[in-house]
Image 1 (cartoon, rainbow, N blue to C red):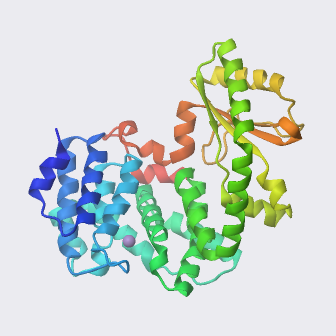
Image 2 (cartoon, protein in one colour):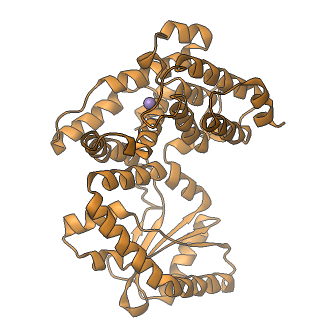
Image 3 (tube, helix red, strand yellow):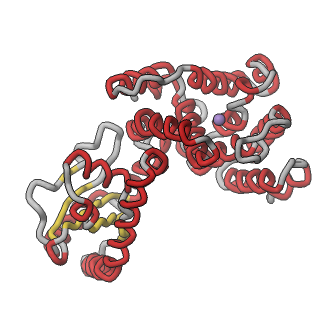
Length: 376
Ligand code: MN
């Protein structure tokens, strides 16, 4: 069924941008959500759009474009209909006359509570810049929230605000960027939601230290250009060895995270060249057994660096991350960092605890949000 078409006829959106966002959202949802639940989301959209009707973002767009974008980030993680609906309504209580009881009557208690919890999180203000304070603040946020989906919404909200940060005055921009690096990126990291963590960090440093950002990203582009041939050579060598041993999988050249380069330079006092000139690969295979087999094969291709092997499969990181890590002496003696993991581990590495909430993984009758968050 073509939901996008169905909805377009039904909903008269306010602007082209809004319509595009709505369509995109509905296409994403129809990939994994039954139509009965999509209807709830559409109702949340219509309601939210009406509530924000006379408001605009600083960018000039209708306000509802923001909740729509937040919902899209969550739909990309295949979150359930309540999370998506709450995302569409997340600023309604804060910014309009609508209250919690209205939401409960129109939708349901769960959606109302999600919206309310996101609004409450917004009310605690982070003022102190001290590192110790940031830690306390992060703990406070996690302790306050009973349902982990609230954190997903909050992180997605922050991510979209960071994506559109250029519309704020410089001073505010810096404040938000600092807060993002101190509070929100570490929370995303703690929950293993790498995709969001990486983007938050990248946007954070971009706005907090624009000059450093430009220098590092220029150096990265340069080293990437020079490395292309070697990267190709290394990956075809690994692939050939895999074919030989009948291991099926994918070899991906790994993009370096700008923020992690910045941190390494700052903490380990290394030069930009030292940190940037590293080859990174991720190899994804179908089962755990092949992870270990492949490790042995790769250690035969390139000499491993002593003390750099980590078995996060046998001993996962605290956020659940699993992978084999090793560093090798690559061509020209440059370090070659390899991660080996299964498809499932890769999914978890990208979405972390959110992976447990992804639609297919949730058994509606047994999913108990407040019990789940206790584990975190
Ligand atoms: Mn918001």
